[in-house]
Picture 1 (cartoon, rainbow, N blue to C red):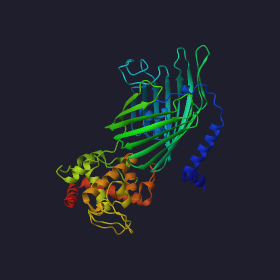
Picture 2: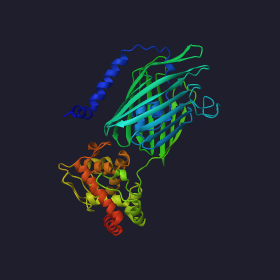
Picture 3: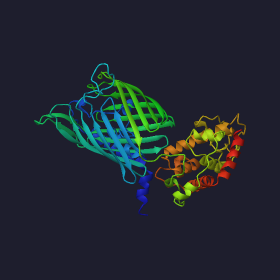
Length: 491
């Protein structure tokens, strides 16, 4: 009974966040700004964040997160190093398991106010010389919440400027698969930067912002941000996946001393742990409008197609010893197999694919479950439509048309591609944890949280697939037999 209030707050975190936002909103609206020059606000840095119209409060997930919302660091599963060529910012972050993620950011490390060469022939750069910042950040997940904080020093762009201490905090949470919410407070106590002779050079007031990301489709994200002090609104539409995405954004500022509106376009490329972000920023008070940053991920672990990670197995399973694994290496199927060629596109083990199909349909391409899922990998009508398959609207989805020309779930080739695409998305969502990804495949991602635990049905299904997965790895003959069954279906 003692845990009931905590459980209630955990389940009603959406209401708790709304109440917190309302309280902070009322507080900041009641404050009288002492800022005489809005241009003295701490500059926002980062080609990716600026390219999103500044709406990077809720979608932060790399080493530059503390410059927007320090809570974003908690999303990192690997180390990340980012250098913003145009603004002289170096960001480094690394997650330490069970402790949290630490990050450092250094701003304006350029020798001049632009990248490498202060010359009109160099189109890259927009940062003003001397706006130095040094930040130390920490973030961690607590259940469904990501919490983060930063502390550091800022210096004004004047000779003789002293350093002043600043503090930031942020929070992020995923309400559901289609909505994420976040907020941040910068310069909690207000920051005054003085010259060494005592003259006040800059004053940074408290800045409060809230943000939301809507995801109507896995490749479409609508980022939004509202600043209370100073008043501005940023919005951006981003289309693409984690590998390649394009975006267009706009920022509206409700101040006579700042441009009332600016827009940006850009793209991001993430391939093999290397990142490239580019933004063209159309803002009247900037002479150089091309922003570029590069980054790389390192350390940590990723979902691989070699063998199941021990951390991804259920508590009841015991990982095999290294010697046992080495003496029973799986013989890889010849690449001539159509199924092998398909599964390689999704970086998933052949054995894992076969285990899922065995659990879902036992290689029956026209199987229909009692819930209305159909085909080799038992795709629900709604999910199949979202993944591009043609599926009619049925009065009773448990009684579908088995004609593959009418319902493409019963086209084995298309069903396999759709199922593997969906599972790969879940594997990325649950950060390579096979148990959670499999559980979500069975019961739906809305019922599975990254922090777990799985419900009984999801856990039972995950264990069933993982056991079959290991069985295939230990019994090459059976794996080849079932692979031939799949090949016969595809052909």
